Length: 105
Image (cartoon, rainbow, N blue to C red; front, top):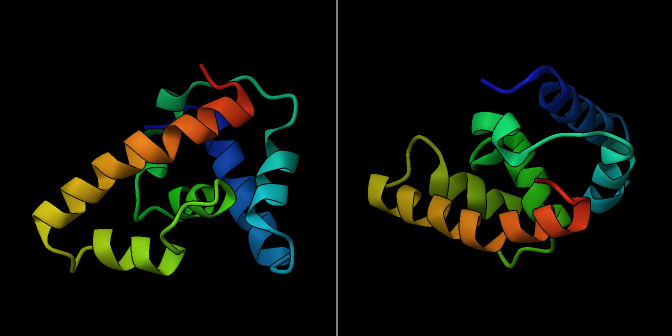
């Protein structure tokens, strides 16, 4: 379960993305992440696709897969081994960019 700060980041990011769909995913995260202290582990399952926040993070980090592709290939109808493989790829390729950009411990 995510901690309150991480959950606030998730909720505010998704709300801002909905209310300002023209804003880039990177701009949304840059704004919401400012001045907050958190750890990657604090985000829980919100940081693994197909969670909406994870898809937003992938888009913000410029991942080669679109949010729609992440959702399709890691969602409940996806093959379990493909889902597990892609979630590992997410952890190896997206998390490091997120950690570097926002100095997450």
